[in-house]
Amino acid sequence: MSTPAHPLAAIKEAMFTYFTQTAGLAPETVSDGSVLVESLDLDSLAIIEMLWDVEEKFGVHIDDVASLKNMSLDQVADVLAQALTTAPGPAAGTPLTPSAA
Image 1 (cartoon, helix red, strand yellow):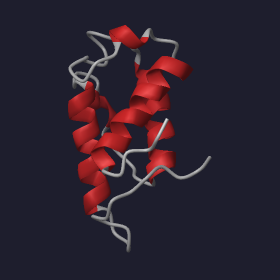
Image 2: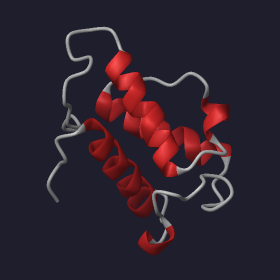
Image 3: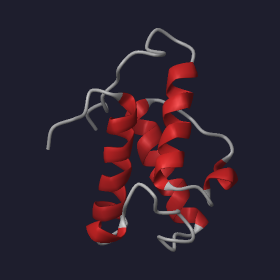
Image 4: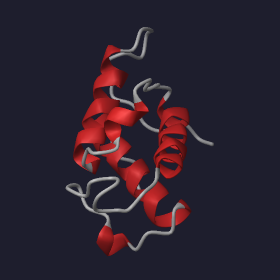
C-alpha cells in the first residue's frame, strides 16, 4: 500500500489501518463518517490506543481525548491534521508521511 503525500490522507489511512488491523474491525464498517463511540462501538481505551499509534507515526499530540469520542473519523483526522500543521518545529505545515516504525 502506498503512503499518501498529504497529511490528512495519510492520517486517515493510518486510522483505517489501526481500526481494521489492530482493533479487528471489519473494513466495511469503517468509513469517513463513522463516529468512534456510536458507529464503531469503541471504548475510551481503544480511542486512546488509536491516538497513540497515530501520534507516534506523525509526531503530533492531542491533549483533549474526551472531545474526540463523539466525532467521526473525518473529524478526528481533521483535528490531527490541524495539530500537525500548527505544531512547532521545522516540519510544521509541510507534507508529511508516517515514520517507519
